[in-house]
Amino acid sequence: MWIPKRDAWFPPDWKDDERMAFLFSAFKENRDVDCTDWDGKIDFWSPLIIDHCRRRGSVCVNLQELNESFRRKGSVPLGLSTVLQSMIRSGKVQKESDFAANVDSGWLSWGVGLLLVRPLKWTLSALLGNGRVPLEESFVVIDLVKEKAAALLAAYRASPLATHSLLSFQELRALSSHICPDESSLCLALLQLQREKHVTVSLHEGEKLVKFSQAGQGRVSPVSEVDLGIYQLQRSEKLLEERVEALGQEAEKCKQQAKSLLKEGKKSQALRCLRGSKRVEKKADRLFAQLETVKGILDRIANSQTDRLVMQAYQAGVAALRISLKGVTVERAENLVDQIQELCDTQDEVNQTLASGALDSGEDSEELEEELKSLLEKAIPDKDVKTGILDADFVRSLPSVPDSSLGITDEELDRELSRLTVSDTGSFTLF
Image (cartoon, rainbow, N blue to C red; front, side, top):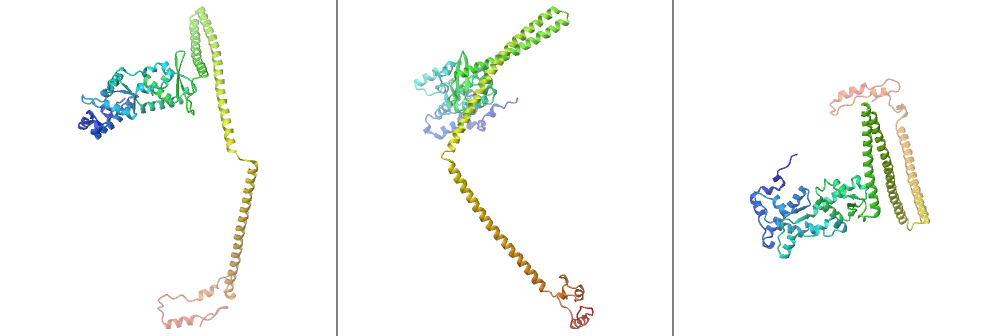
């Protein structure tokens, strides 16, 4: 797997010696002396520290680790202590001991309460008025622990374990190994989820248990006796399944061994192996019957929870329907239907009136067309019209149309006129 060089993790300014000499220098004693100098360093180092933690997959950081991680050409930044103090004031980081200050009794039983004890160096420095941050003091990056908490909750709800009301801490460690690389990160993410009311913890018979809020629930409910009983049944189911599978493998192994001994002619030894196989099978059958009983109980519990949800949905639907029908009576509904019917009748009458007007205008148009046709027929003499077409001989006897230039002499016109005599029946002479 290719891993980028260390310098590739840093911004472009990291290669600028002059710029980095300024950023590696100590802060002024007071921000008021030069606020540009002060703010420029804070704006550079704060996001770089958060990005450094995110890249490592961690939610905690201390000054000693930062000094080593940001070492450049043998030098370490001189102002990281001031940067951390600024990040504390702005709420970007918080001391690990303060972050765990609101743990409940469940966390104390886990031993997480040890985080409440502030390191001795920090206590002494606070008493002595020293504003420096101890090298080993651990700080929680708030944005990163919130990201881990959200990812952990999403991973639980998307897993098959989401059907379990309680999870053991070991099951949760296996589920979240790709999210929280160590137990410390997992505990801090769980603490954040507890602040958000999505997680509660419990210690039962020496075993650490975690309960998540279910999808659609605003907050997690306390661990109840019912939750513990269901957890014990689910644990028994898992143990019985593992035991039944192991006994089945053992019985099959005895049978195979009996076959091998029988082939070798060792009949008595083969019979002993076969008897052992039968004893193992009987034991497996008894455990399987117990397993079926446990499964049946869990199925009844699951069905009862489903029935309860269905009843809750019915009750919510009835309440919503009752609210939506508030003030609605049969009389009001009948009056509304009558008004709608009256409006529909009025609309039908309007449509009929408009349609009749359109038909009258169509009849007038037909009468006008008939009258126009008769006028055209009267304008043409009967003797010159045969089915509306002029006699063909008459058309051929007409002279050609002269061109627009009229380049014809008077003599030519006289000769043309003398030729225009019609001798056939129905013809005429043009003078």
